[in-house]
Image 1 (cartoon, rainbow, N blue to C red):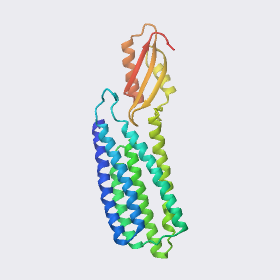
Image 2 (cartoon, rainbow, N blue to C red):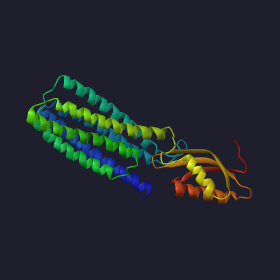
Image 3 (cartoon, rainbow, N blue to C red):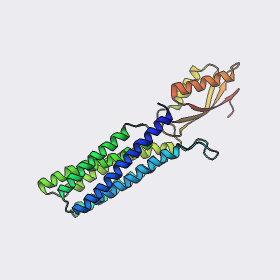
Length: 288
């Protein structure tokens, strides 16, 4: 499947997830108003932040469609990584807010209407499962997709926790179960958010891709490509999670043909290391 086709498919998946999430957000807000449930209204506000995050993810895919120009010679693909980083930060804020709110409710329990809460939570779980399935069927290596999926996963866990809490409240009347389960969900979201922030931040800082060992790469190229005497000044980074970039200097052995060595180096990088974009400076002797 081509990069463009995968990109369009990912964009469509995020759009469908956004539509489903926004639709249920309205349903939950109306249900909260009719049932007089502050908990449901608060969760509708949580879903509003998810809608904003999904909209940002979709917008990032649209921006990435723009062609490279004089100001951004690599194009706009990295905007997806920036969107993933922002979504990771927003997940952190949401999880912390849920925890603070939950602690307050443990200290001062809030009466919850369990029956409307259960009905809305079941409907929400169904909607979130559909959205999560749509996103998970996309490119799982794409950080923008993963960030969007984590927002939906947070909602899905929240709906599941609400269902359990509603059943417990209906059976026992014990109100603290709702905030306690909310804290558990918040901790799971925090762990997932940290993964997204770490990976997207690593790319934004132009760190070496996690699946590339620079030392092994240099040793392999020097061993497998005839005519290479030395490789140095190697820099490897990523535009996005699936677009590694490399620059390096290669010293030619005596009598080696530069054009042939260059072609073989580029072919080896693409075939053995997944690096299709490489800028290689050839030298007759090492220039430090």
